[in-house]
Length: 292
Length: 336
Image (cartoon, rainbow over all chains, first blue to last red):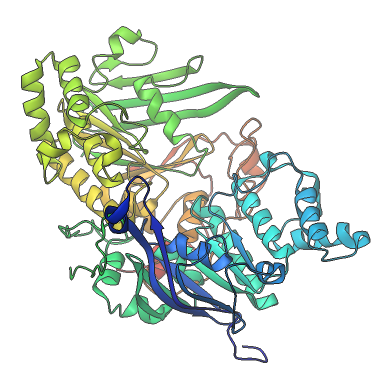
């Protein structure tokens, strides 16, 4: 950790509800869906915190609250210890950037890589216009792509290259925090590692803090320092990565770990849990986690 | 273990797809056999040709695609025969389970009707008999309230439930071979676990053979006894799954296993396979993996890449298979 001990990002009691459409009056109140049910979480400088859970557990909603795409129903997001309001200043917005799951749809197909990056630098007035070209090349270099890719359109890039461009784009704004939402799940295993190494390298060089969201526990184990396990909108377990995988405390974490197919050993003796995991929608308020 | 006459025998299968950029050789020189009641895994990354090879077996490729070679199923040739002759085999003797259970089901028809349709068309059953059996099939795939689900539409079911329905449909006519194309890729890990257990039980009970296509080596490991590995349109390695994963004999298989993040054992930094997949329209000569391979030399560029036998039941297209590959034994850091 650097000079100060104030975490670049902190969530306090973060809660996000959605109103389900179609009903009025009293029934409407009952149709409120709680996606994130009061989450406290801190990411320190240069730390990678994993956020794992199954579809519908609220991890992407949480991510969107962190970057300011959603405003929380209750609770606070603090940047460097100061709470950001529902309308963030442009400086605050710049400090938290997001990289999305699908590397293809996140890029504008009509723009060359150079133009995407240059646009950001111009709009946010980050470098004088004479330096824009140089900065674009530098950004690509930081994600392991050479300057030759500047003149390429997204369709000519492979999945792994596109995801690196997405990371470069997030970096263009010189953020303190990057929220990486399933950034390698659309990629083949042979290129996943290259993208993960880019993130690890950026953390090491720039002291970037990363909230790494994934449903793939094996990947989380490779790159994260701490892991938060989310279930039905709540964080049910938070531990450093080695502890979590060696001694999971929560029943849900244990079930999640047991369900991962292993590459070695014989056919797993899979024990059907006999209960399905509720989606956010079917979870009654005050949902408790089944003791499996 | 392989009986005299395999259930399915694929020899020298090649598929050319017609794309706006010109003809694309999506798979070539694919030869393998599947014995009755055997579960075979077919692994490879996107663009390796694994799904195309599966679809070619059932003649389910887009119009204008050309298929050469031979696919013999229970003594009958399936390549080049008329659609009319394939129709009674599809769904009845060979069925297929697709990756995306949402698009594989008709969104505007109830589940009961969709399962019943298979029985009515393939077996000529009447409506009453078909719907009674549909209920039984749903119970077999461990759907708790079959009567309710029969009346529901696909959008009312979760991903796991939809996949169970597809499995029920695939089992409906008691096929002898089930082709599974990434059936658990879209599912959460706990749901995937349940579906894999279900597939294993279903194939054990019905005695059907299975080809399980996946990019996930660990999933294939759970289900299959033998594995085929494809890269850039070609088979590069095959053999019993334990030995192949413990001691790969193709540089690609070895690199793929190394790149898998381990869930047990010591934590290791991510290891990637350098480079990118070759241009599918202009693949490199000789071994297609040589452009990314750490052991490749000049001979790799000139030698034809065909599967050669190693250690009896196994085959590898790597000319360095015999001399040994570096960092073998991907299981060293992975224990259960």
